[in-house]
Image (cartoon, rainbow, N blue to C red; front, top):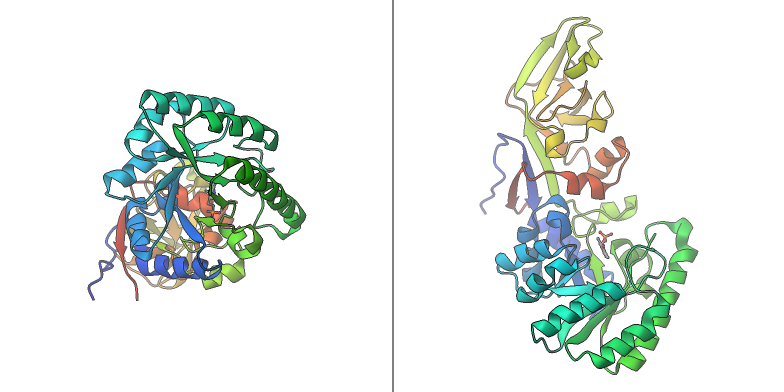
Length: 374
Ligand SMILES: *Cc1c(COP(=O)(O)O)cnc(C)c1O
């Protein structure tokens, strides 16, 4: 078995397809047999590599993909992905391209519905697959329950469209304190779906669950589940994080080591002052790579030789300096930012955010290396 994960010589994000496979099977095992899986690969596959992730998911048997925007769907089509792709949040200016590339729009409002029908008619479409989104309490995107009659009237007239699915999104499926509200959202969705299905006159898929709902609300799984963060190895709670495997690891190297005399400063604005004779290591990763400036001044740390090295001073655009006074290490040594000794959840917490934001902020400058870890 060859592995592309050799010696770390520059900053890189390692993407482990075996971990992805593990997570896919785990999440699938949580749903009833026959439930379809929609892999959410928006935002570059949650900061990993949407194309490599999508290709692997195709091999694993994924039924559907979801992206936020049309451009993300085009990137998948350009890479040869032929699986149906739902565009969660399209804009009318992209409807022509959306149709040309066989992407499937979410119709979430009267304005969006009307403009999509207009473009579909211009392009002489028949039964073009669309997805109708209802708002059940997130109050972000979607028709209201009271719009259902209008939608059905339009659908009865428009032979250009066929409804592939009816769906909704939960506001707090990861939060046990909001259980009652989540159950209310599920009830609302069931009622909408029932009345829509009866009057539509044909079968259509129903879906409402994201990752945390797959785990916490099996009754909301319906015909398909939409999973994002779980595929990448995070379950929004410690117990689930243990059952899942992180897909990405963020590694770097020590570029240079400095001896810092007492009272000397380190970095921009002289934000750090050495108390005694200290040593720092400079690492080639900064806020332009997605390492938040909030991690500066000892809020965050990296791992060198298995030990914690706190970030001293301000995070620069292209580098950080870390305190290695008590760590035996050399220039060229490997540095772990996200990996075995520090999860993305821990690093996210250190900067006051969630794994989703940390992962999707990892910039395209960071080299992606894709392979399989044993
Ligand atoms: C991003 C997104 C998802 C995925 O949610 P996870 O919590 O990452 O599983 C599902 N549905 C919609 C509508 C989304 O925007």
